[in-house]
Structures are given as structure tokens and as C-alpha cells.
Amino acid sequence: MKLFDRINKRFNWNLKWAVPFLLLLSFLAIGATVELLQVDTTTRRCDQAVKFYGDIGFNFGSVQSADLFYNDDSGKLYRLIKGSANQILKVNSGGTSIGYETGTPSMVSAEPANANIQSHISNTSNPHNVTASQVGALPATSAYVPNILINGNFDVWQRMTDSTAVSTTRTYVPDRFAVTTGAGTLAHVIQSTTTPANNLSRYSLELQGAEGVTTVDVDQRIEAANIHMVKGTVSFSAYVYNGSGSAFTPTLFMGTPSASDNFTTVTVRNNGGSGDALQECADSAWTQVSWTADISAYTDLAYGLEVRLQIPSGSLVASDTVRLAQVKLERSSTVTVFLPLNYGDELKRCVRYFERISAAVYSYAGCGSNLVTGAYVWIPFSFKRIAPTSITVNGNWRCVVSGTGVAVSSSSLTSSCKNSALVLFNYSTTGTTGDFVIVGGNNDATASKDFDSEL
Image (tube, rainbow, N blue to C red; front, side, top):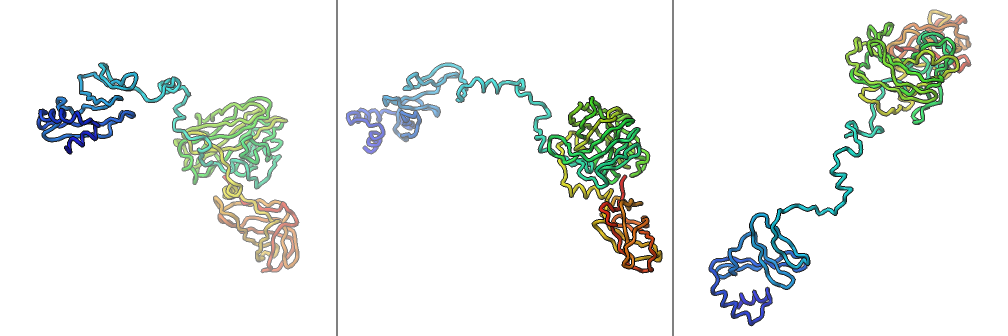
């Protein structure tokens, strides 16, 4: 009766079926195991089972491990038996029963049909025109390689901001950049506030032409101590403003000296000694020119490198103007974004090669020597590439000797090291040996001394 109660509770059988059911059980095969699965009629999911073991069971035939039992909407219990190959289950159109159907099973995507998506996925013709160089590439603004050239943004102008004397002799105007003409004298080499539209510069280098001017070269020399920075593939770039009235093409020359840091003789190495033509610069516009090459095999590269940009003849005659900005040389196979240094950091890089010390700001104390008409004064300065071998005196200087101020008649470099120099100041007044002397500007804001260690 316990077994009957369990079955009756599970299947809700009436009492009148009890006797026939019990009689039937007596004739069932001994040792069979039958599993009845209760299927939820709403979800069609099997969630419970009733199992009979031992001497009694339901003789539905040989029960297979893959047989599926389910209830339909009417409550009838069905058993789905494994069939032959290529039989698949099929739910009827009303969703009330399951049956077999012969056919080839196939996978059907549960994703809603979308012709645009499927067409795009299956398209192998590169519909977005992605190039090989773009695969895995970083945005241009995130890529940055330091500038090997110093003062490439033309922020530092210690010597002057305007020169009318630039001719066939190589002349520094902005720090670290020298200008030379093939013939003639430029009207002005001047600091300009006209810059490219990217707002990365305060100044540009402006060249103003004059009658008789032919080619104009702007160069920077890299010392041997820094050659490891360029010994490989490098990229050069610069912005060029063409105000000549017609398009022109600048040329880049990469040369090496014959001895370490001695550029008396420079041999052009790129393009067989002829230099490389860069991109054409349209009139009345800024153009970024660029060049890339592996220079590691250049002869005598260990001695140094001269990077020289040439404006062609006829582009800087009277009334013509050419400007340069954001000049860069980098150890890279591509031109990357130009990011200027702050002024203080750029100035520190410049003073290794040249430093102007203003007498209007500094005073120097020294002791009168046995030369009663002169005084030796030690002048400190920033650490230089080499000890300066000469000085340039600008403006008017004066000495205070025994309480009396006298003009400096001349001065000369007596000795120097990389961070200071002993300078002899001569004056007309006769002092006393051992007198304390003060040296400074003679009410002249331009009074200064230049200590030069340039290449």
C-alpha cells in the first residue's frame, strides 16, 4: 500500500485502477529498472523522476539511456525511443507534442536575422579600407620620439633676435642654428612670431631676402658625444613657409666631419653626396617637409653630424621671405609629433655650447695684479662642451679701482675651464698693486660677455 500511495500521489490515479495495476505488477519482468520523468507542461522541462527498482518495474521494453519521457498537455506520458540515423525530434505546430522526423540535423543560429550584420561579417573585401600600417598602430598624438636637434622650436635667441650681417660666413643667430648664403647678404635673419597653425611654437626663424642672394643654408651640428642617438634610422622634419612668390623644393644635406667635432671639412653622405630633395613647398603656405633614412653606415659618423637644410637659389631675393619652424631630427622610421620643451629646459641644452652673461645683472670681484692698469677676474658660467678658447665683449664695461670708476679699455681671456674663465680687464687708471676691483657694466644694459663652445 505504501507503494500504491506513492504512485497514486505522483500520478493521481483513481482507486478503481488500483486492483488491475497491482495484478499487472505481478507479471512484470523481474530485475528491470524504469525511470519515469515528470515533464513540466508549460516549460517542457523534465524536473522530477520516479524510479522503481528491484523486482518490479514497468515493462515498456528495454529502456535505453537516451530514452526521453514526457507529458503532453493532456497529461499522457510518452516515451521517445532512440531511432535510426538521421532521425530528429520535431515539435508540432501547436507545440503540444513531440515526434520523430527523418532528415539531416543542422545548427540554426538563435540570433535574429539581420542581413546587414551577416553581410558585413562575411565580407572579405576590406569594406573599411584598413591598411597594413594601421593595424595595431597608435594614434599620431600618442607617438613621441625626442628631438635630437637642440632649439628646434627656435625659443632661445641669446646672441640676438635680428641680424643684418648674415652672408657667406657661417653665422649663428638663434641658438644652435647657423645661417650661410651661397652669395650675397640677407636683409634680415630675424625672430618671427608667425608660426604654423598647430599652436606649438612662439617663434619661427625668418629669412628675408635681398638682391644678389643665392642659396641659403640653415644647419645644426651634432657633437660626437651624441652620435649614438642618431646611429640608425632617423627621420628629419620641418615646417617651411614659402613667401617667395612661387613654389620651391628645399634640399637636405647630411654630412660628417673628417675629425671628431672638427667641422672644418664636411663631406655630404646622403644621395651620393648630392643631398636629397624634399617635398615641394607651395607659395604662401606652411609645408611640412620630411626625410627618413638609415645613416648608421655613413663614413666618419662617429666624428659628428651636420644637418643642413638648403633653400634654393632665387627663393630669397629682394622682398622674398622664408620661415622655418619645428625642426626635428629623431631616431625613428617615421616622423612623430613635435612636442616642444619648456623654455628653461631648452636654454639648459643651449648653454652647453654658448652662454651670454650680462654685466648689467652681475658684478665680479677680483684682485688687482702686479699690472696696476688691469685686473684678473674669475667669471663662472654653466658647464660647457669644451673650455671656451675666446670671449666676445659686448657694450661698455667699467671697473671700480680704489673707489674710482674707470672704463674698461680692453679685455682678454687668460685661461678657462668648462665652467669658468679667468679674464683680464684693462683700464687706463693707474691703481695700486693688490687693490680690490669691481667689474660691471658701465650703465649699459647691453654690456655682456659671450662664452662660446659651439661646433
